[in-house]
Image (tube, rainbow, N blue to C red; front, side):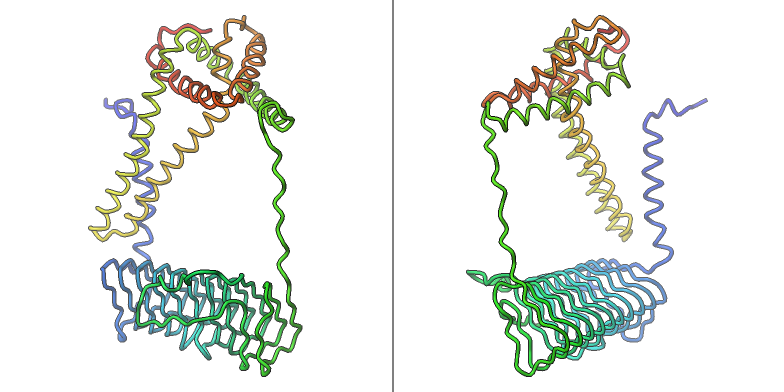
Length: 430
């Protein structure tokens, strides 16, 4: 009978297929568009959530659900009854969005019929058109922000240049930067029929502003507040506090700071070492014995394993990109996205695992292995552990050569696993 032992990677393959299946489930509960040019005409009604992946997206009809768009250009002229979540180079919303708008892009404009709830925007230029109703709060982070709508909630803006017009029923909290030298980043924005306003650095409050709450702004320069502006609450100008970087104590070899750093390293590695020996005493002894008897072999295989790990990292990412492109050609866009994300996630797991191993395990395993002859069983592992970790901390803390010794320790700590695997049936304990 054919068993799973014939296929050691069978479980992993099944898990990956299951995850891809889960990623595809939303396809049955939403409408997905993946063409280069996506147009939802003025007479179209989409009764589902909409996922859009394309170069140019134009929504003129009615979407009875949420819109998730990822494109170069997004234009909404129709009606969306749910949320709009989008990332695009240019975002132009002149239609009606009944719920929240959460967008990120280079040029963002919200004008016309407005937003039923909150507007959250991040980009280079964010504009809320004149008399545009916003049913909730406006939260924006950008290089420049022009807010001229009728906001029913609060306004929170962080930008280099901010200009306010229209009405705000709540409070306005603004943070602006200093005037920058050189050309404005706006000159590098994409050119399009969506005009980009020019806002002066700092805070400008127009004469048509009506703020029922308080105006609080953080800025080096005082705001330019027109005489006709009506602010019912308090106006508070908060100057930025100068940030002082703490003086960094010099950590030259033999200095008190260097000694404290090495003591911290020693205590940390010793704690990890004790924990490893309490949990895996036989495994640590066996690997330590291999390092003592075959250091050159472990070092050589360490180089091979390190290069192999690099190959796996790039290979996994290559396969993920290849699958993503394949699924995209087949118009399975969610599978395309999840294939890429799983590949990136796998690379991240390898990188984190490698970092944890070389940072915490190698400083314990390799020094112990060098002195493992002092381990005579029982709790005698304490002696080579304490002495070995001390020597490791001292040697790797030396100037000029410490980094090179640390590299050799890491390679030996990697290669010992290959030597153990090749001799796992005949390698005695330490």
